[in-house]
Each structure stands twice: as C-alpha cells, then as structure tokens.
Amino acid sequence: MRQKSKFASILLLVALVIWPQFAPLLSAQAAIPTAAELDQLLAPVALYPDSLLSQITTASTNPQEILDVDNWLAQNSGLTDVALTDAAQQQGFDPAFIALVNFPGVLDMMAQNIDDYAAIGAAFSADQGAVSASIQRLRDQAYRAGTLQTTAQQQVVVQQAPGQTIYVIQPVNPQIVYVPQYDPTVVYVGGGPSLVTFGIGIGISALLVDHPWGWGGWGWNWGARRAYYNHGYWGGWANPYRPPRPWYRPRPIVWANRPGYGGNWRYRPRGYQPPRPGNRPGPNRPPWGPGNRPGRPSIQPVKPGPNKPAPTKPGPNRPGPNKPGPNNPSKPNNPRPTPPNRPKPQPERPGATNPSRPSPPTTPGETKPTPKPEKPANPGRPGTQPGSGRPGTDQPGTNRPAPTRPTKPDQSKPNRPAPGTAKPNQPSARPAKERKPAPQSKPAPKAKPQPEERPQARK
Image 1 (cartoon, rainbow, N blue to C red):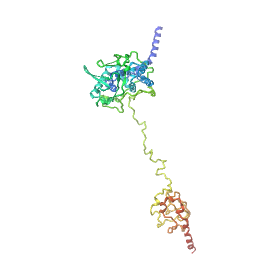
Image 2: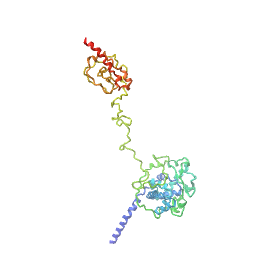
Image 3: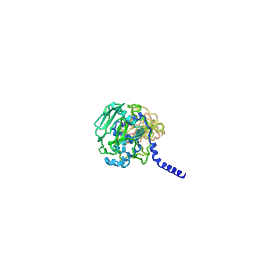
Image 4: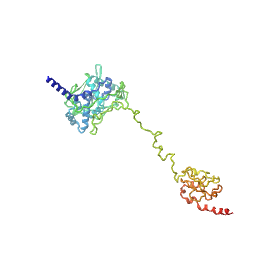
C-alpha cells in the first residue's frame, strides 16, 4: 500500500514538473479556420514557390518558435550563408526554420503577423488537405485573372488531374529563389502579370544538401494533398524544438480586417497594408516578448470617443493666436496713451475750433479735466486756457491735460480771444514740433494786450 502511494506521489511530482512546459503550447493552439477563412489567411503567400510554401506552412505549426528564431536572427545579424545555417542547427531549431533562416525577411513577416500564421499552423496540423485545396483555389483565381504567369524568376506549370487543375510554381533557376510580392486585394481580381513583382534572388546552392532541412527535400504532392520534407510526407518533427520560455498566446482574428472577406477579393479593409518580406531584423530592435508583442493588432483601433478629448480649436472662450485676449494690449477696449508722433485725427477736422464761433464762458475756479485724457486738448472746450500766458497749454496731442487756474473775467470773454492763440489746424499738420513749446506759443505777443487794457481801466 505504501509503495502505491509513493508511486502516485512520484507521478504527481512528474506531472507538476512537466505540465508548466507543455501547458502553454497546448493553450497556444489557435482555432481551426473555415475554408473561406483559410483563403483569407493564405492569400498573401499562396503564389510563393512550392518548396518555400511547404516550409512556411510546417513552420507555422509552432508559432512560439517563429518568434524565437526571429529574435535569434536579430541578435546574430553577422551570420550569413553556411555559418548561419550551421549556427541555427546547433540551436536545435526544427528543419523548416533551419531552411528559412536564409530568408530572414520571410521569417520577420511571419513574426509581424504571428496570429495569422498561428491559425495557418493549426489548420495545417488538423487537415493538410484543406490547406492544399485553399492554395490551389487561390492560384486558380490568380491564373484566371492573368496575374499568375511564367516569368524570368519563376515557372508556372498547369497540370490536369481528375476533378481539378493543379498549378505548380518552381524557380526558373533551381539555385536561386525569388520571393514574389503582391497585393491580395488586386492580384486575385485582374490586372496582368505586372501586379506581381520580385525582390532580390537568394542563392540556395549551399542548401542543396542531403539533410532533413536541405532544399531538395521540400515540396508538395498536390494529388495526395500533402506537404513533404526530406523526401517524405510531413507528419510532425522527429525531435521537435522546445521553447525555453513559452509566452505566446494567439489573439482572435477579425476576419473583416483581411482581404477576401465574404469571398469578395475587391474588398480592401481600411488601412490595410499587404504583408511583404522586409529586411533582416537588426540588433537594435527590441526582442519579442510578453511586453513587446509583434504585429498589427487584429482588433480594429478604437476611435476617439466622448472620454477622449479632441484637438482643441480656437472658440469664443479660447482666443486664437491672432485674436486679442484679455491681457493682449492690442484689444480695442484697452486704452493706451497715444504716442506723440501719431496724433489722432480729431484735431484735424476743419471747423472743430473755429475762432468765429464763441465758446461757452469758463466758470472761474473750474478744475474739471477733459473727459477723454487720450484725446488732445481742444482750445474751444472748457478747461483750456488759450490766453493764460503759459507756454504749452494749448498744444494739441498731449495726453496729460493742463491744470486749470481761476480765470480772470476779462480773459474769458468769448468775443476777444488772445492774439497769441495758435490756429487750430496748424499744430496737427506738423506733429514733429509738438514737443517744442517755443515755436508753438509765443509768450511775448500774449503780454502785449496788457498795457492796452490798463488805460481803459483808469477811465
């Protein structure tokens, strides 16, 4: 009895040790897509050469390894050709990835769209025939649209099989592989072979070796609807790669964000950019991880709602850059002194201070200042002393009113203005001399009428 309990304890301990390593892999399996969804997923790569396409589909069965190999390529950017292949083999990567490290742009494209390729891998593991049928459907549409044709880079062979037409794509030169680039929203509709372009050819002569990952052993048996590697059908890896730190979890795919939604290949999602192989990732790129998930989000971006402030625009309560604000001195309601060299046009109006029109007599002792300090003093208004004898009191354009004194009765007679009073339009015509009191007011002529009035007062 004790031996059975000890054996059960050992099994429980082993399960606890092994489960954390395999649980993430089991939970990372994406949902199996339908036939129409498979067409949407495989549309960006269905026109690739058969050997490259078999490597992509088998590598997609382990999405965590896609991210790990892409990080490893970024950290070992100095390795190329045979040294790169040997180093990848020493890392324990699966044969598909050892062959794909010489196509770093393709691997990086798969990592950028990891959720799509995780779904492709789940479908391939479940039913290779469904994946094969989807590839042939897409190739048939491109061939009928005139975009899939033999070029200088690749050869398209059409084979007739019972109940179906098979399209085989192989490199023209078996030692050089060209990766096609195209837009799935137009290539399956029509437009000619110019819609399919090619990047720089990649030599694979060093990869044509007798190894499980050697390029000569990859391809498809389209009649049997099976992919093969190492000259045999693929059924899993003999010694699969074990991720040291599994962290990837597939996200749900919004099929409306993919071309071909609802079987309509003219449909183009908003903001869609065709996935294309790019450059090899460099060492400066942060590695993929739980805090740095790759790829565009599968869920549509959230539009700004009522809780997110929109860009502010100048409104009635928010002055713009050219609109005077409360503290802006250019506001019309904010008075400021008029500079001496810019007299206001009021004194220049003809007839404003006509000497022939009598002005109201000034009350003796009145000290009321003018109502608007910024306007020049007017000789015809109360509070001014044209004949006071003080220079500068009758100069228009000054901002500070002259203090008034009690006016003598004989000086405030309306019919007898002082002879020395300046003409009203003369000071405003020459504003440059406003600060010079001597030319404007002559005190000597103002003193002459005094002796003439004294004899009259003695009589």
